[in-house]
Length: 491
Ligand SMILES: [Zn+2]
Image (cartoon, rainbow, N blue to C red; front, side, top):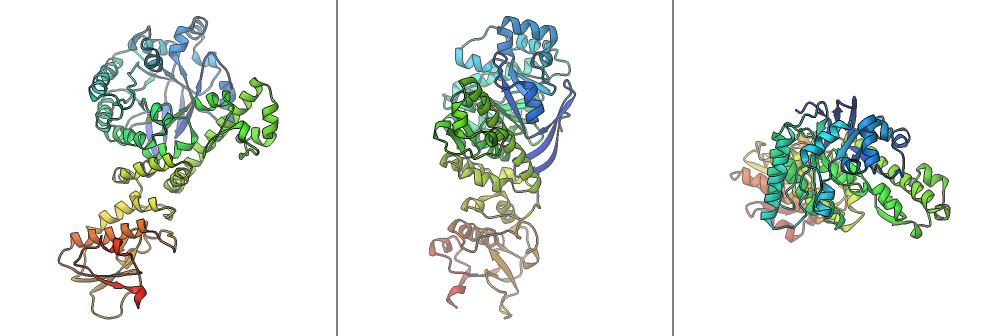
């Protein structure tokens, strides 16, 4: 376990943790949001972020500070905490973004790390190469090699108590992301931003983002604190947390406000399209949409930024509570309904259900089946893996109905979509206490049929009979031919 990070609660791949930031003398509870502060603009002051919004940590760009004479001198003289007037932890970015946008920057990775240390940053960042999506593999490999070289050299920079980020790159190649994660985790560096996912999010490619992060997570392992770098829209936080991301940064709250855009957990709205404000934050309870539209540009931008940040922190709190309650995936399912591309993201997450299963607690509150995607959740995967280890008699009746009183079978097990078969003695154990709709769907039936098939595969010598409630032929095709079928609805 890394000294600076401790995990307290788990749900799916998500976790509540504590990131200890020694230089700031603070412990940040994760998942955490880092508002992005542009040192040249003060939409909302860092002091207000701490006092009104409860921000424990923020992020600012050391390259902008380095390139701006008066701020650089003040930061070197008085320290970043005093210049920004922020009592929590401060992370600094390095200029990698400027490098990717403009092709060059005028400092080396070592110089900017030393500068970050000199101005009192609590978490610094070397200059990595943010490789965009879909580039040729050779380029992704070359640039990753450069990033890895810089991470190795960052270990030699005198950074004192400052934690140091080890960005994980690899473009849209999950195997490169995995290798990058493994390499970064083997360094002495502390926090692990998954980089260059912003272009994927800008194009609504949440499924590709999930695959990139899942690759990075496989390499990093369970104990590493992970930052989904540049992910600031509250709509996708639940998905990001469920993948195992611990830190998010938001420039969106301010950038969107500048364009009169209003953030919600179901997507972005334009102020001119709003007849009502669907939010109870101080901004939205004190103003109508017309009030906001009537403000001058600066005041409107400040109010919208405040709303955007309120809704963003609110979602982080909601996610933490969901982890505590064990229903994070139910929240991800709700968020996945906000946009078809979010649904793609959730479906991609479920492609990694076996990976999530490794951290998912064996017992939680009730499993709620709330969409056909629920049939692919890690809890279902785990149950079906467990089926292979259960001992079975010579003949077995698997039924959605009552156990038979005849002595035709040695035992009778329940069948419950989406889980499939299980001994009645397990009925009261998680996740078989699930709340499922009476009007089941094909995905749940197919998953149950898959469970029957797994049981048959593990026990080829047992005679099995399945009593089902009118399963369609296409679902029954998934049941091995050796299983005798009884349609209970025909009786
Ligand atoms: Zn609001």
